Length: 104
Image (cartoon, rainbow, N blue to C red; front, top):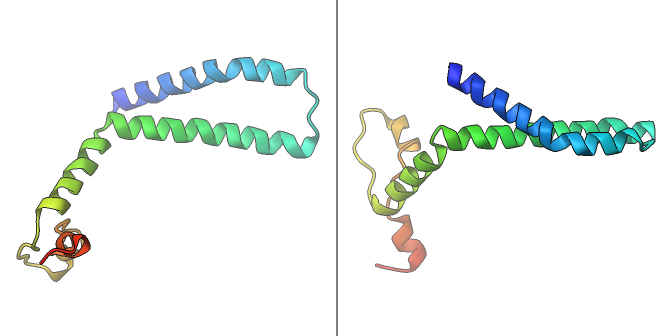
């Protein structure tokens, strides 16, 4: 948990450092009031989105997606499950890839 907080803190500091020149420039620009809030919200949303992507990459989300894709492409049939609902999260393609490619 501590390393997640450290990564978030570092990303927030990096985001602030990157946006500081823009902030200084905007201090001298007199934006109309209706434009100030949306600009700040979009900036905050961009920092949050970049942080979320960085955390997903750092936590191995890319590898997890790659494993699921490989399983989907290579597993032709659904495996037998105890519960019927398990088939909803099984990444097997059940012959779909062959059908999409026009094979027998």
